[in-house]
Image (cartoon, rainbow, N blue to C red; front, side, top):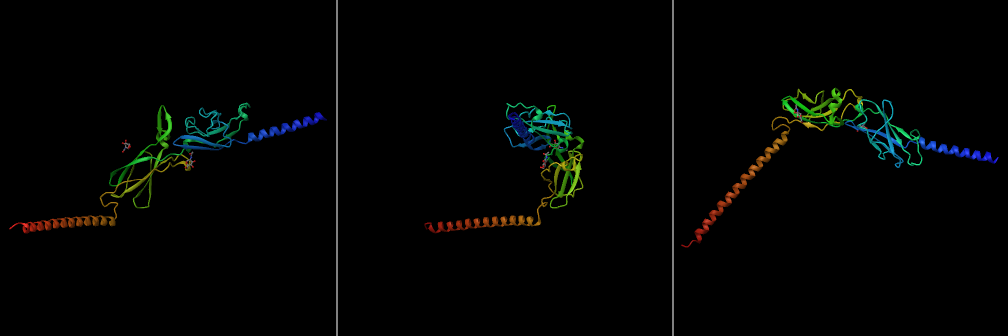
Amino acid sequence: MATLKLLLSLGICWCTGSLATAEELSDPIADNLRWVSLDFKTILTWTTSQPEHTSTLLYAVDNGDWKESPDCIGVSDMECDLTDVLQPLDKFYTADIQTNAADEDYPTDGDELPHTYSSRFNPYRQSNISAVTFTLHPLDQSTVTVNITDTLTAIHQRGQQLTIRDVLRSDLMYKITYYKAGSTGKREVTSASSVAEVSQLDSGESYCFIVAVFIPSRPKETQLGAPSSQQCTQGHGIAQGLSLGALVGIVFIVITVLIFLIITVAVLCCNRCRRRNKSLQTSQTSAPI
Ligand SMILES: *[C@@H]1O[C@H](CO)[C@@H](O)[C@H](O)[C@H]1NC(C)=O
Ligand SMILES: *[C@@H]1O[C@H](CO)[C@@H](O)[C@H](O)[C@H]1NC(C)=O
């Protein structure tokens, strides 16, 4: 009877013990896994409720074998830069954050560690593209050349930093949005080249341009890069861009200043003349006869 009791209580202990362990393991420690990617620099970030544990990041391409990311083994940071391992770029990658045991006395093999899986990520299709810079060169009265600088990416090849054109090649297009200064009607052209000509502009008018990377081969929501800041051409002639009111104002100010100058000079001259006359008179009267 005593032995049965002992066995029973042992059994209960064992049961509750393993239940507790199972609960701990099923509770994922890394959470909120998020891909952050700009100009093909790709970082995975996550949060944890137990920062005393370190993490190891594994990744797999297209559901292939898991590999360790060399820079992210047993790290206590909650982010990992995967730019150099997610290559080739145009593949779908999945990451796995494995949370290591805090207590080194309990040797655990990989299968028992808590894992959290990321969503699938394709850098080529999903990396955000930052705003480009460009210059405007009026070609003639109705044509402007837009000269766009291909942004540098975080990808290096043979010691060289690649531009978005090196990475995207013929998939790279630019969307140029422009409008006549002071009007709301916008027009758009797409260009496969980084030097684009925009023609059929009204001669002598000022136009404003905004440029963004455009990648038609991507899914709709990631096709456009960030919009550039706006640049405008100068219209022709001094009067361009100034309203009639401003012109009248300027003419009025110039005339006022001129009149003021003339009056000042006249007053100064008169004073001097009068003083000279007076001193002449005084010297005459005081002179001994
Ligand atoms: C791209 O930018 C958008 C808007 O800022 C953001 O919501 C998204 O998470 C970014 N995607 C990546 C992969 O960084
Ligand atoms: C475009 O700009 C780059 C540098 O900003 C310059 O080297 C190049 O000659 C320009 N090309 C044209 C067609 O204006």
